[in-house]
Every structure is written in C-alpha cells, then in structure tokens.
Image 1 (cartoon, rainbow, N blue to C red):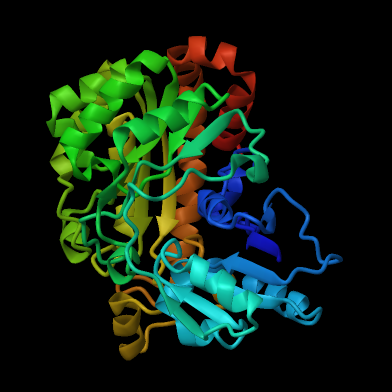
Image 2 (image 1 turned 45 degrees about the vertical axis):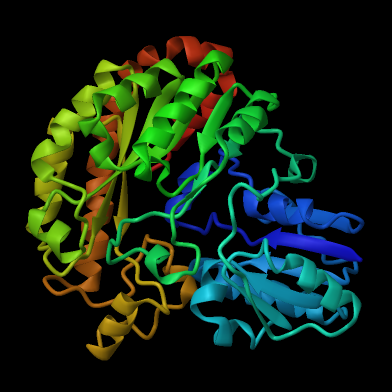
Length: 423
C-alpha cells in the first residue's frame, strides 16, 4: 500500500509553539510507525516543515492528532477522503475523544499503536478496517528505532526517546487519562546505539519524565558519557535533590534543561496537584544546575483558580530572583476528555466562542475564578513583554556559558537567539 503518515502544523499564529519556528522537533511516533510498516511505500510529512501532498493518492492516511491541531486534522482528512483514501487517527486527542474523531476518520487508534499496527495494515489491505483499534501498552524493549531516513532529519539536533509515561498526576495534564501514562524504559544499550549512530552531536530527549526512575537515568547517562555528545531534556524540579544525578547529567553532556516550575503560588501547586514542586526550593534548584554549567528554561502556567491578578507581578520578581535563563509562560488549557475539562464544563466556565485553535496554551478558553479571560490574556502578554527585556539583557551571559558548543553549532546559536528574541 501507499501510506501517508502526517503530523498537522503545530506553529499556530500567536501560539506558544511559534517561538520554536527554527527548531525542528521530528515526529518520532510517525517514524516508529514507519519502521513497523515494511513492504509498504511510506511517506512521512511534518506539517510545520513539509508541504502536504494533496495532489497524490494514498491508500491509507494516518494522522496524529492533538486537541489544538484537531480542527486542522479534520480538514486535512476531509481533503484526502475525497480522493478515496482511508483515514486513521491516532495521538492524544484520538484517545481522549475517539467518538468525535470517528466523525472525520474511518478508524481511530486508542492508545499506543505499536501492538495493533500490523492488524491495521492487514485490515486496510482487506478493505475491512475496524472503527476502533485499542492498542495495549507497548513494551519499550520491543519498540523499534524510527525510520529517520523518512523524517528528513536535517536539523542541527536529533530527537530521541528513552522512556514513556510519567507517574505524576498534575490536574492539568492529559497523560493520566490516556492509556500510555504508565512509566516504561527502553533498554539502555538500545538507546546508546541509537544515539551513537546519529550524525548530530546535539540530542534532545522528548521523554515526558525520563527521571521517574533516577537509577535508570544515572545508568543511562553514564553509558552515554563516552560519546561526548551534548544534550537537552525536560526535567522535574525534584532532580535537584540528587547530587549524583546532577553530576552525571553534566559529565555526560547535559547543557540545558526545560523545567516545569509551573507557578510561584503555593496555593496553585496544591490546587493543581503538582506535588513534586516546592516554591521555596526554586532558586536553589537553578543555582545547582548553573553550578554545573547547565542552563534552565522555566515553564509557568497562569489561570489556576487560586491565581489573582497580583500573581503576574509576583511571578516577575520571583523569576528574576530565580535567575532562570529563560521562561515560557502558558495559560492553563483544559483538554476535552479529561476530568478537569468536565468539571469546568459542569460549572459553566468554558467559553463557547473558543474553537480548538485556542487550545494551544496561549489563550483563555475558560472563565477564571479571580479575573476575567481578558485580564488573564493581557496579564500574560504584559508579563512576557517585561520578561523579554529581562532575558535580552541576560542573553550575552547565556551565550558565553555555552560558547564552545555554540561555536561548533552556529545553527543552534541562531535558533537560540531567534527564539529568545522573538516576542
């Protein structure tokens, strides 16, 4: 069969991901599905970088769908269905709202696709696709490496996944509600061999929480250290309580972490069940990472029921004192199909005029408790402008910290500067 595997565009206008428009995060999930499709003619398309081949015919079109890309995914599916292609959806949105997705697709994969994909392919060839395929949780030891030749990975860095899932139960996160939330690990030798064979010297781990098993993380980083590659990762705040872990991160090439501080309001941490964070530790956490020459981007969310307008000014002062190297500011976004979304719906707090393009963490799509939606959006915009000036002044220090790496990777330096000065 001729098969198209597609990720709709993420870089929505004014969306939080637009600052990444020079950074190509390759869709590893589609590359893995491609690896599981031997004997078929596979095309992988990343909607942010590749032109969607509407003029071609495909027997099967597989689309990975997130809530904020769902409207675009439905439009893409409609165009290919008109040419006779069979459409199958997967991804978070398909698992959270399979019934809705079936209005636009022939089939939906609920959960991970690895253990059902061969059945999907056979049914497609037999013209007997089922409406829903329920994938069991994949054994990470059996998940193949992605077909990187199909991903056109010409970026200055490569994406790698060592683990899946996360044991945390933060109220705003969709992970606890999808079938693949259980934490699982790949064989360390397999991860090592994949990274060893990559041409890129910069690696970004796309794991939700690689550090859920700190002993595994330490052993993995010890194994990777001889490769002399540099790497970045998203990490929880509690890694700073393990000095050995921080040491081996630095020794094995970690130079940047993206960390979910989420809020400087202790009441909001409690409201959102962010049990791993302690506000009084934030500055010390950043200091421990800086002491090991690891830079830190902090993630912060506004819109919790415990957030008042005064939190914007308080957060600005806190971020300045924390000395993070950059900060991403988000507006709380509720995923349809999750308990928190259902709760806000019962309370009549969802804004009916907000379509799915407003579900990308940059817009208020509900009525906050202590301010209006407009106050929430304007407060975030003002905070971003003030933080822009703060981080612009600190940019030379950040560049100096990573001067040897940046001189070897000028495209990384261009992407870093562009991203930090894009507001």
